[in-house]
Picture 1: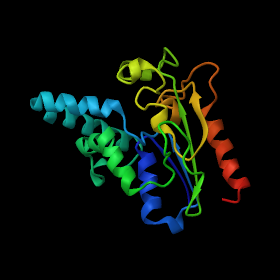
Picture 2: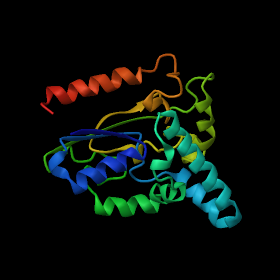
Picture 3: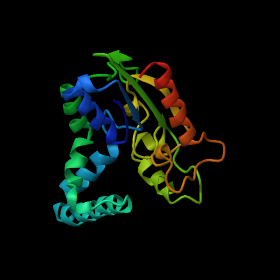
Picture 4: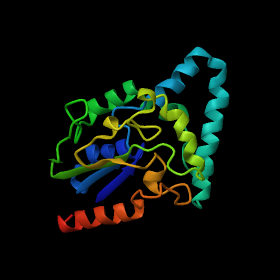
Length: 212
């Protein structure tokens, strides 16, 4: 299998490779918070400072999660929705704990490359560093969350560029925000930014040429 995971999907496919490496040919992560996201830590700090907010915040995010599943034509009640667990796993501490268990492809330096191949598995990553990429796109709200990360620098609105590094970096400075990376919302993006669909097609061809 050639697995591609965006955002939290990055650690998810690493988990699959960690427990069933014999079935995995390659891992490609896109805007994945391998070293955590300060946005998750910020949310958890709010919860700790004002516990009364935990229930409504968790309920609201779980509802959004269910809405996304429903929009895909699936029954949201057949899947678990636990935003608090997600925030903990995407925090800096939670990510460090995960990386100890599943180190494949992880860089050994702060912002370096990870192993290109391990256990016969090819590792790749790419990411964006845009925030407001199209003023008509509702995802411009990510400019607000980007300010929680290095004062708004070097991140896609939710994930720092260096946190997204994994295996061989295809490119880590696309003018995409966190949703542009998967062609959302409605395919709107910066005028001269590469089309995410084309980038995925190119990567699929890259894997094909490697016999994967």
